[in-house]
Image (cartoon, rainbow, N blue to C red; front, top):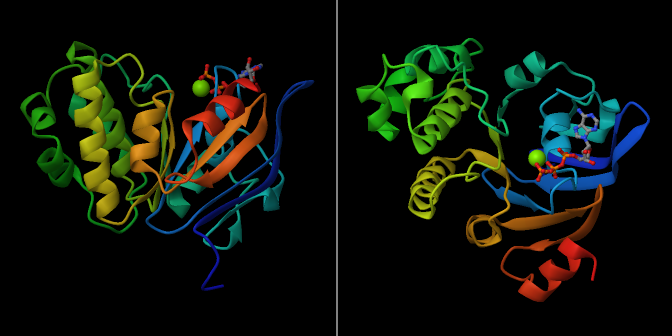
Length: 235
Ligand SMILES: Nc1ncnc2c1ncn2[C@@H]1O[C@H](COP(=O)(O)OP(=O)(O)OP(=O)(O)O)[C@@H](O)[C@H]1O
Ligand SMILES: [Mg+2]
């Protein structure tokens, strides 16, 4: 299937017990492309990323990656296939060092350019602090560890859940400049963002979720602020 997108989510539902969080969500990402997912608190953005990452079980063919159904694969198998998650809240091991946190990401190592040396080239401050406990780093530096840890598996697709959350604007710009450089080297990404300007500046396509449903989908350069406001708030 030469024309199949890298990732194709089709009519994905997700449940927490009796509560349904996603209703028929569809999303496609081409190789090397960036999709932004935006939406208000509780819209289902993290549920979507966690479903793709195999942390929430799905119907097998609701998620296809490189043409293969992966909806029922475990998180471990999903990483082996080439999808890595930078989770909401970073989820580092706080008392482990920077380097130990990065090595955890490299436990599943696919062939590719990323290794400790390469991560340190991109984020030199992490090399300076490599023996420090991750909790002693600034928020921005911790986010770099979380991104570096995901890259250590050499993913074809990076899932980024609110990587700008809680960071100062100048730090956000720095993190996104790094992410842009990473994507320019061929890694595709799905970025979940509350910072809509940041999301649109980087993405090829944008999907807006509202209460678990796709309220808007389009080329990032073509959706207007008014379209987004309407999709965000349902007004
Ligand atoms: N573990 C869980 N158990 C029960 N309900 C959950 C769980 N996680 C999320 N939900 C519910 O599912 C819905 C979607 O949540 P989700 O975390 O995916 O939203 P989100 O768009 O990522 O929000 P935020 O912007 O706050 O991160 C919400 O109504 C939330 O309360
Ligand atoms: Mg979330």
